[in-house]
Image 1 (tube, rainbow, N blue to C red):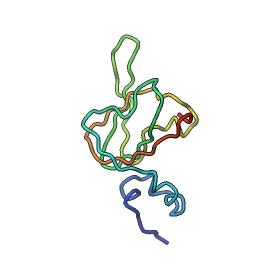
Image 2: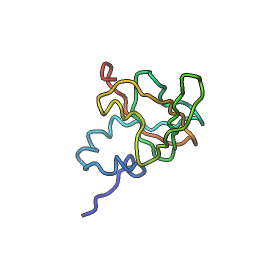
Image 3: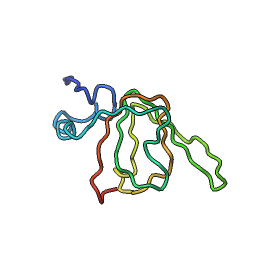
Length: 115
């Protein structure tokens, strides 16, 4: 039985996999936001304030080496989220995550003390 899609789950594949009941619990807390090109959604070794469920944006994960050089280590799109360390119980993010295209993303605020 196929269920109807909500606006939040329509473009993010993780949200789409949630049951209607679970999505209903999250929906009031998901805020649609739009970011400028290359704005960092999170920074290395900084607390994570939001988890971002991407829809039409693409985010690069960039690792900065001790000598200051940087390398892209991954890309996140509508199949994932930015802020996974919070969900896994870790606090800082190890990578800079700038948006690549700019687009609509759903932000979920992390409770103080949780990040």
